[in-house]
Every structure is written in C-alpha cells, then in structure tokens.
Length: 160
Ligand code: RBF
Image (cartoon, rainbow, N blue to C red; front, side, top):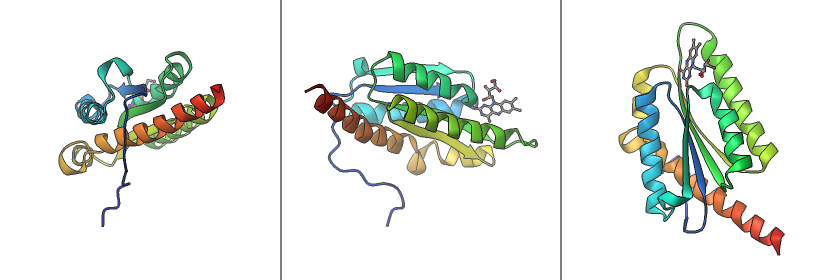
C-alpha cells in the first residue's frame, strides 16, 4: 500500500496554476519544478495557464506566493524550495517561517498553496526526494490541480 495521496480524475483544462521556485539548492528545486511542470502538462494545464517565477531562497517564497495569489488570477500555487540542515539553528527558523508563512498566505488570500518545500538532513535525502521514484514534484502538481479545480468551481458558484 502506498503512503502517498491517491488522486482520481484530474483535469486541469480550465485552471491557472502558479509555480514559485527558490534558487537555493537550485539543482534540486529545478528538478522538482520540471517534474511538477511536466505533470501539469500531462493533465492539460497548458503553458499559457502556468505562471512561473523565482525567488532567491525559501524564506522569500511566502511573499512571492502572496503576490501571485493577489495579482495573477491563479487557482492554486505550488511553492517549491529545499532546506538542508546545516550546523546552526538557521534551518529550524527557516522551516518554521516558511511553513507558517505559506499557511498564512493560503488562508489570507483563499488561494490554495501547495507546500512544496523539502526539509532534509542532508543533500542525499534531498536528491532521493527530487528524482526518480520518490520525486515529490508530480504529487505536488496533482495536489494543485485538485485544489485549483475546487477553487475555480467555488469562484464559478459565487459568481452566479
Ligand atoms: N534557503 C533555502 O531555500 N534553503 C536553505 O537550505 C537555506 N539555508 C540557509 C542557511 C543560512 C545560514 C542562510 C543565512 C540562509 C539560507 N537560505 C536557505 C536562504 C534564505 O531562505 C533566504 O533566501 C535568505 O536568508 C535571504 O532572506
């Protein structure tokens, strides 16, 4: 039995998705963005309905995600970053700040935000989770399609 979320009948034909990527541990986050982007395409989210943008590090993800939520008419956003533990407590402060920041953005703007931030003890763990069988990018993309579709439906109902 897989511990990962299962998804049924996803169709991204009518939704707009934001992707925000942090450039720290850039090779890892690029892989994650690429595989998430490919999965979006697989489920009919065409390029013209994907807004991609970058920030220097994970700490900046919250602000940029909020900017997309308020100004780019997206139905869901995947915030992608990779925190790797160092020898100082910085990792814990950053992980808490990003987690709380993205949660707050999602609740404040009412745009679903997918937590695409790996928090790893070392680079090897980060690699395992960003390529091959355990790559998290596709699952984040599917989560965004499911929630983005729900958000779009809500907007439609409220405009009737
Ligand atoms: N950003 C990341 O996305 N991942 C990291 O692992 C990471 N580690 C950091 C470690 C230290 C000691 C510092 C000072 C910054 C780190 N950052 C990391 C960058 C951070 O998210 C942010 O971009 C900068 O602090 C500038 O606001």
